[in-house]
Image 1: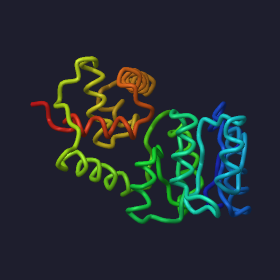
Image 2: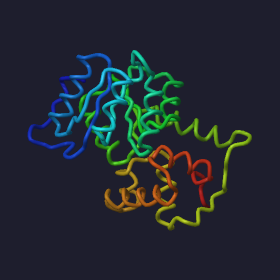
Image 3: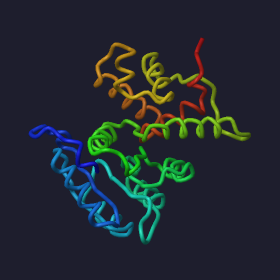
Image 4: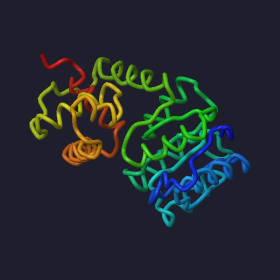
Length: 234
């Protein structure tokens, strides 16, 4: 992380958020863990490879897993899939040196909630972990559009599952928030547009996830696109 990015001492950025850091480079892993700890996050475990991450995950029970894609024994995509098999609600934030399109899409399809490049500034990482813990989908600028475009391509492909725009189990407000989530807006942006509090937007998203039996915002975006909810209702 860029040491030039200062953090205000005394501010508890990630109070009560439990994080596991998985990276095979000791200096990088320790640096990320240190930055998170100094910002108020509780780093409950670190791991140097996929096997170790899977061994400690059950006991550590982190809210967020910060995961490198390039590990010596497994890929980050494989680790993400394995973690989600243990706990479908786990929130994985990929932190990788690769910005290759296929790496991003593979990680998201495996269930990653976000994808951040290692070139990100320190505060950008701190923000990303907090937002991931809150259920937001976090991507390095430019990658969110890539993911949305791929989901739309998948939904339009022959044989894709679709159900039309009718979602009878959602309230009008929940559907409105879902449409905005599916366009890539953050919770803060949605709150501003709808003149709601950030917490109210979070509650609507959590209620929607529960009703649709989905686990994270990425799955919610895919659902919205497959059901035509990114189209203008008028």
